[in-house]
Image (spheres, rainbow, N blue to C red):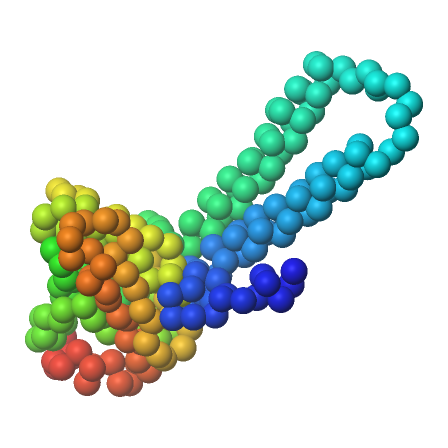
Length: 218
């Protein structure tokens, strides 16, 4: 089972191979749900085998009220509340919160079928298509918009997904722990060219970022 769990965890588009503080809590929640589900599967299988193989001793009396309260309300309620609290904490790492120090900002506009990338604090930087350059080891705020339909901006190894919605500007905070190339996709069906709408995040050492942007320092 452990071998099966590990298969496919690593990969350029795997959310189970986190490369930043925004993606790590998401992976932990997923693994907790996976192992919890496996434990429940084993438990229910064992109960089924016990019921099938035990010697008949009459029909046991089970209180329907207790069964509904404990099995239908209490147990699912505890599990869902625990997952909610854990999920809220995981999502907290993806939000730019008031009072935090200014961070590197990128503006990404989804358009059928490409991503247009600009850097507001670096006006001399060239506008890129399907490529984002960021400093490694630092938080980055990505402001996501759309020029037409709904798109889904998602870099699995760096964080969760956020939608580009007409008339709105949504912000997600990402961070790459180390220099490298991190692949992403449009995660919301947006038309016939949807599958041809990838994006790459290139994380650089801070000293090399300016050269990658192709402009002078602001």
